[in-house]
Length: 120
Image (cartoon, rainbow, N blue to C red; front, top):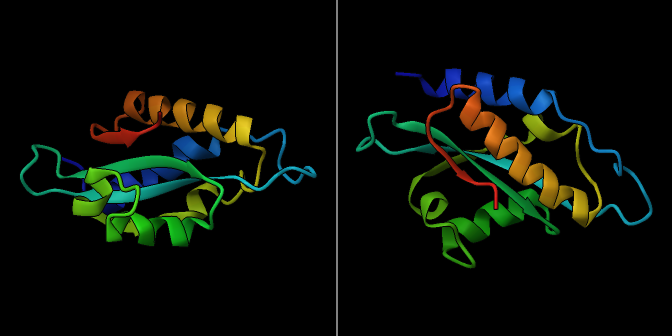
C-alpha cells in the first residue's frame, strides 16, 4: 500500500516525462492539473485525479469541492492540488490539454498508481 507521499512522488515522476509543445503559444490558456485523492474505504486509499481546464487550477479545485461541474471522486475525496507536478506543462492550447490529460492518466495507471480518476 502506497502512502500519500509515495503517490505524490510517483505522480510527479510520471508527469515529468511529458512535454507540452504548445506551451506559451498565443492560444495557450489551458492547464492540466492533478489532485491527490484519499479514500480509506479503498484497498489502495491514495490516488490521483487528472483533469484539464481553461480556469486557474486552484479555482477549478475549489469548484470540484463545492460540487460545481464536479468529479464525484474529487468532491468527496480530493485532498490537495499538486501544481508543482505539472507546472512545466502549463499553460498550453486546448487540444493539447485534452490529449495530455488522457495520456497522463493512462501513464499513471501503468506507473503503479493504482487509483487514477479523470483523464477523459
